[in-house]
Length: 294
Image (cartoon, rainbow, N blue to C red; front, side, top):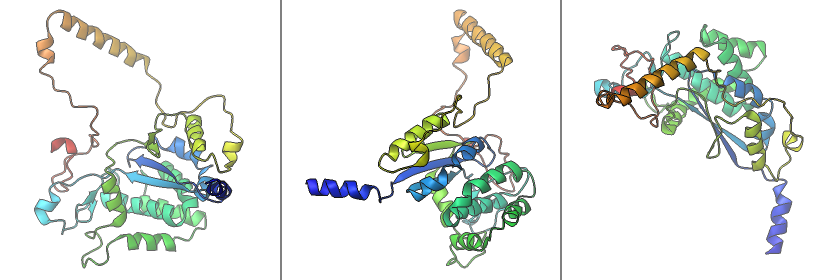
C-alpha cells in the first residue's frame, strides 16, 4: 500500500491535472472581455498543465425549418438548413455561425492565440465588416490560417451530399447539445459557478485545483488593492433607486387597500428558466422565433 502511495506522489509532479473551465458566451454580449483580458495572461501555463477550456455559444432556434423543408433548404441566418441559427442587425446569421467555427478551431489548433483573437474580435469586429476585420488580425500578426480553415471545413459532415450550408456540423452540434441559453457571459470551474466571483477569488479556487502542480501565479500570488469582479456589473443609478422606492411604495399602498385582486391578474414568468434573447425580431422570411413564443 505504501509503495503505491510513494509512486503516486512521485508521478504527481509529471501528471497533468484534469481541470475543466467552461465559458458560456452570447454573440450580442461583450461582458466577457474583462475576464478574457485578465485570464489571457494565465491561460498558456494552465493549458500546458491540463486545463481544458470548453466554450458554449448561445444558438438560436428555427422551429419551422423542419416542418417547412426538413432542414433541406438554406436559411440566411442559419446553417444546417435551420438546425443552428444566429441573428444580428449587422451581418447574416451564417457569417456569425462561421465565426463561431473559426474561434473554436483557433482554440483547437492554435490555442495560444484564442484569447488574444477573441478579445480583438469583440473590440473591433462585431459592428464592422466581420470577415475582413477577422482576416486583418491574422495578417497583421503573421499567422497562417491554413490549419484553421482546414479545421472549419472538416467540422462539416462532408459525407452528406448537399451544400455546406445544409450539412450538419460537429462543433455546432456540440454547442447545441450543451444547451447554453443565457444572453450573457457565464463561467464554471468544473461544476462550480464562478460567474459572479471576483477575479482574485476565481484564481484562488483555480489554484486549489493545482495543489500538486507548480503554477507561477499560484506560487507567487498577485496582490491587488481592488478586486475586480469576473463579470462586470454597472453601478446602480440613483434615479433607478428612487424609482424602485416609489414603485415599492405604490405596491404597499395597493396591498393596504385590498388591491391584491388586481395584482393576481398579472402573470410573471419564472426567473429560474433561461430565456432566449428578447430583442430578436420575428422575421417571417427567416422563421427565427424566440423561445418565449413556443
